[in-house]
Picture 1 (cartoon, rainbow, N blue to C red):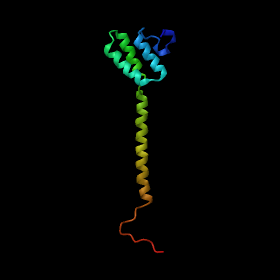
Picture 2 (tube, rainbow, N blue to C red; picture 1 turned 135 degrees about the horizontal axis):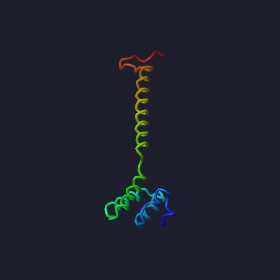
Picture 3 (cartoon, rainbow, N blue to C red; picture 1 turned 135 degrees about the vertical axis):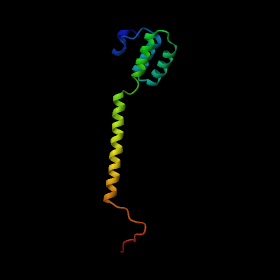
Picture 4 (cartoon, one colour; picture 1 turned 90 degrees about the vertical axis):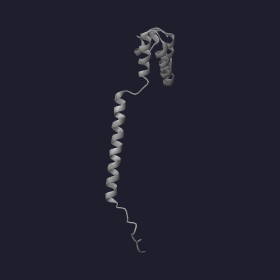
Length: 105
């Protein structure tokens, strides 16, 4: 894949057929294939520039730290709001005791 046809972030990647195939997989949305191919290139490539480009391409398939932070904040909010609702709901509607008599008709 010529560098002018590559996405902007990949224009500085070195010329390599396997790396070009990974960029094509990335553009097609096959991120699993990108992760597998990047690991293979990282293990077998002799050129450090190709390895670095494969690692960069693989890092683009995962969540960013900010996304993970937002996920953690959302999970914490759901937990806290659920706990609050459970505690407050029990105050408004006490449970009947086991020995309580049924109401008369």
